Image 1: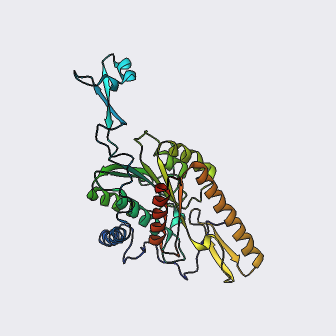
Image 2 (image 1 turned 90 degrees about the horizontal axis):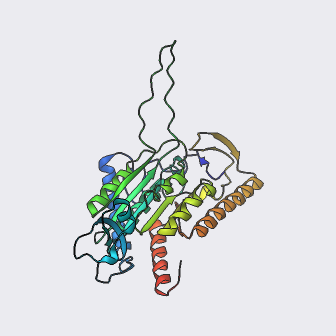
Image 3 (image 1 turned 45 degrees about the vertical axis):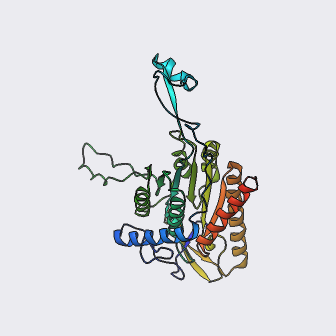
Length: 348
């Protein structure tokens, strides 16, 4: 129910509108560049410095995080022997270690069709791009690496089968993968390229498999770091709860939930035409009925409570961004609260 988008035109910004900017997040190169530059400036002014000093360890030495293996050389510390690799290859190997000074951050960005909707100051898709920009520029410093996995739309339709007796039907055009990975690289220039790729992703019909998207961060196993999942989490919690719990075992997980006020309650505007952007189903709803509005609000509250409970059970920090509020202020408050909790020796 909460996934239906209003088709009234009132208060709904056109697809591609961006918070605080004058351009689209689509493939319009120059406009996307201007939007991302503006977002970077906003993030730098408001959030820069909030995460300084958040590394797990800054002590001198080779580090404690396991890295790659290499053959043993005279003078190597025998305490670093990688016995499983040595047993498999019958050649002595030692395990390299990685210093804790560098942080690796991975973003799981959900760009389902349900995100091309908004009745507030901007679209939900805009908030996804803004949140990805904020987290990228917060963490990409001092050699830190930032990568992303992106999902857009539902399954790819299978090619039409060829018939032996009839003229073969034309095969559909090649479709890009709906789940793809952007490798983690250090540097602001590479981070800006990653954001351009995310902003230029085409939103396709259907619903992204959020569980499969999160599971891309579990395979292959990566060094400990930060994992940020950005979505409206409208998929059933049973689909993505288990992969998220598995991810939280090794990484610090932040779940950024994007919400529009019309997904929480219906306005009293008479007959309202609504469409599910993921399935294309169109319905007419009589919003003047107070019982209908109450049932809708109750169902939406139950849905959001289930999402919050699943995120809490997974051990993920939970940040909710709304399309009708100042997302930057909400993020500043959230980051400040997280820092305050850590300095007092408490958890989330």
